[in-house]
Length: 216
Ligand code: TYD
Image 1: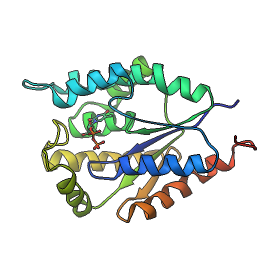
Image 2 (image 1 turned 90 degrees about the horizontal axis):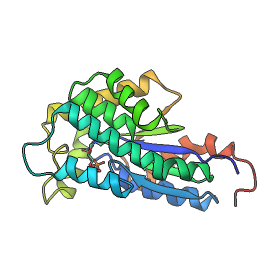
Image 3 (image 1 turned 135 degrees about the horizontal axis):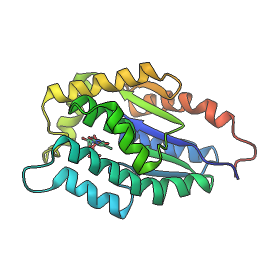
């Protein structure tokens, strides 16, 4: 049994990642691939507890460094208990957000250095990187309209930060994709979910084509 592929979905708020995680997983299963879908922060019991601390805790919130450490700790638990074991038994893992969210939010948004965030990742998760990261990019008008529909009950501590913060996050993601074109596929997320999943599957096709037959 060969190791499964690790696919991360990234993008700003309202980019459509969660819908795409579901649609990409369905499309891969239809091709005979075992798929585990998960999300960050979270995915395991411990990481979901940290998610709650990060996004919904009472009080005055976290400084940028404490926040980065908590994301790295949640990721460490997620990688150790869910992601690595799934990949090792041959399943593909589709993860809604991963390391590049820490680089974009705690780095681009909050100003921590990329080197520090990568060091935390090396310590926490032995530097595990996705085989491919799908970066969903949408115009500010499209994400604004989606968030207005989704967040009628209010947003979380990070999603609710000011527009300039989210603009820095979007710029950071674009910079990462330019710097490492082999690790990222930039996906136009402005269309319908069906159009977007077709772009995402086109980006995954080389990984699927490289699988040994049969894939049952
Ligand atoms: P979530 O409700 O999952 O948001 P979304 O649907 O936009 O993915 O909340 C996750 C929030 O946490 C989101 O605002 C991005 C932020 N985040 C970071 O700041 N750093 C990280 O490393 C991760 C994984 C998420």
